[in-house]
Length: 505
Image (spheres, helix red, strand yellow):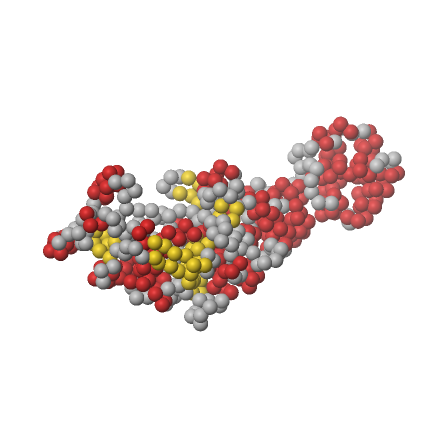
């Protein structure tokens, strides 16, 4: 790597929700910047006003903040290369497009949308390029005086790059090695639209140059655009300043066939967006990982492992550890299959890993949404620590903990009634008397006394352990039953035993 300061950018278009592939691109940029003590820039590419969606930029920023992928420079925290929205940089781009025209590397095209549609219908595989450009309405085919008059009359036009014939353009991709393109396969892309806005092709090159971007990481779907960008870097005289490129592998459907899409998530029952996205135009709500109950630590961890590993069998990393371990050399060329069960495994591991204090706010919200009111923070933290190993997603905390805050309204009677006997009724009546005689319930002491009482009554411990659990919890789940009783306390445990006995008989 050169001595040039590392500056990378994530440059999304504010056109809707943020796909997990986009978040992974942002993450890899961020990790590379942190690993190399560089800067991570968020640049909003909002030049396509037809596709612009109100609220999408704020949503993207919220997603990055939730993930902990915090830009050093952005529209919210601008640096010396502001502005960071391309729509606010509109005046910059025409100068470079006109320079390319003057140099003979680009040209004015006056064709109307109707004329181009007619060509597409009449000519199979029509492309605006070297084969057909001379027969179309542009400054290469028209007399100069007519071009001058059209410009003077402010006739709507675009500026297109003039792709040369019979050339090979190449670059070295940091992931894929040497990549080459034949220019005869590339059409004359629009650089500047009729409304004065640049297309992605011109804007990305100009902005990367002006913002001194050292490395550009983007999805492999952008590879077909590479020859246009290579030529622009060359034609504008900036080839020596061109960033090193890395085209990231696709995130694939679970079966490995094709790129993972929003439609796949809807079909297979899992999210593909970082956070819930509501499209005001269509009224459609697309679910996100956050609202499903994923921790950001887990979401970031699973994204990092889609197409990258550190060379060991280790799978659990926080974002700082990822930055320390990250290297482009460990990114796979092949696409990475998305596995939702594995994604949930990451979340379960992170719920186990973090302290109760870290989970407190989220768990409190999960319970509040179900009408459970928490008054004692210390009690909540104790509950979280006791049950978090049993939770995969944050909403699981309700089912796994509600009984600590409210007496069960229903019991799994099918697990109790078929084997219920008068002897068991006698046992639990005696247990209630025994519990009433102690000051404080201690789990280990209660277990010893419980087993001794069962032996005294001629019962197997296992025959009364499950009913005791269902009395306290309502079902066949939860942590060690004596830990539950100790946390509920003597009075509440007695109340639940007496209430359940009525239901069990």
